[in-house]
Every structure is written in C-alpha cells, then in structure tokens.
Image (cartoon, rainbow, N blue to C red; front, side, top):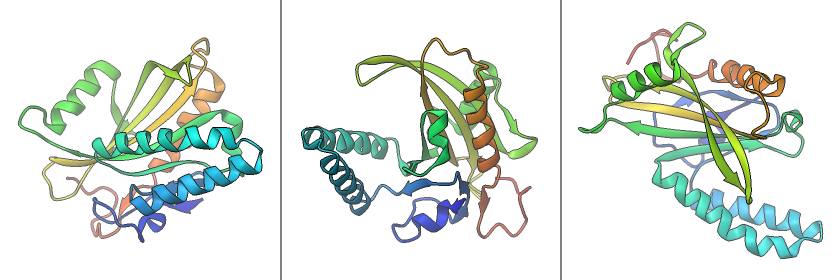
Amino acid sequence: MSSLRAELTAGGSRVPAYRMLVPPGWEVFDLSDASEAAVISRAETRLRSQGRGDLAAAFVPHVREALSGLRKQNAFAYAFAGEASPTWGLGTASLVGLKRISTPELSLDDVVRTAIVSHAAAPLAGDERIVRWIERRPVTLDGQAVTSLMLNYMIPVPGTRRTQAVHWVVNVAHDPALPDDHESLKAWELLFDGHVATFSWVNDAEGPGRGA
C-alpha cells in the first residue's frame, strides 16, 4: 500500500495535509497540468508500443475532457489501478477526491441528511468522522450501457464547522445484470471501506475521533 498524501506532496493540494492508504499497485495523481501531461505521455507510449497508435490520437482529447470535468467539480486527486495491481481481477474502478464547500443554497449538512434519507448513509464502521453511502446509476461507457456503483465517503475538514469536507468517490463500472450483492462488488466495498478508514489529518493532535 502507498500513502496518497505522499504522492500528492509535490503537486500540492487544496485541502489540509492528510494521509490515506490506497490499494497495492494503484497510481495516484493530482489535477496539475504536469500530472495531466505525464498521464497522457505514458498512455500514448503504451498504446504505440502495442501497435495502437490510432487509439492514441483519440485518447488525448478524452483524457483532457475527463480531467477538465474533474476540475469543475473541485477535484484535487484521482487514482486508478496500475498494470501490476491485483485489483484488476475485480474489474474497472477509480477513486476521486473532491473538496466540498457549503453554499447558501445547499449546506454539507443538507447533503448528508439527503444521503441518510435516500441512501441509508451511516458512519463508516462506527467512525463518526466519516459518513458513508452507496449509489447506483446507469451510465454509458464507450458506447455500452453499464451500471456505476458509487461508494461515497464524506469527511469534514477540522475547524470549518462542517462547511468544508473531503468527499471520496469510488466508481466501479459493471454489467447491469450483475446483482447488487455480487461477490466482486462486495469485494470493492470491503477494499475501500478498509482503505478510507485509514484517513487521518496529519496535524490532527486530538486523534481520529476529532470532530469538525
């Protein structure tokens, strides 16, 4: 496992210093221009080495569009399985870190209340710092109809009176015919429940139980 915060130190972050473990073999990136260029360059090199230079040209605008969308959502980090990651056996997934800020129209308390009512949100493994809930949405991926399993984890930023939070979102694309309790989907839930539970603020002197 690797430290997500350590991966982001060079590029900076729009949230206070933190630590969180990610699955073995997962690669973590910030939303800087330098990281975008590195991701595109590596992907182009891999595609051309596989004789798929035709796909490289189409891949670049796709990545740029996706990262532009993340920036508009106030994302500060994203991660996915590297080529050597054992999680490839479970399917395709990604992790995105968003900074959420209350607005006069929608407070973060409202977001959590809606998640409780609509998605049975609850503290992660009894940890009152982290609110967890699951959503499922039909999406289109590369022209194919799939279902997106979304694992959501909301963590308030200390000292902001719950007006700012880190929101981790895991997206798992899968066949719509797969039942909600399929073992591979449950494996994703267990995997990220365990990793997000390692989240801690670096300067949180009061320990993991500190509130917002």
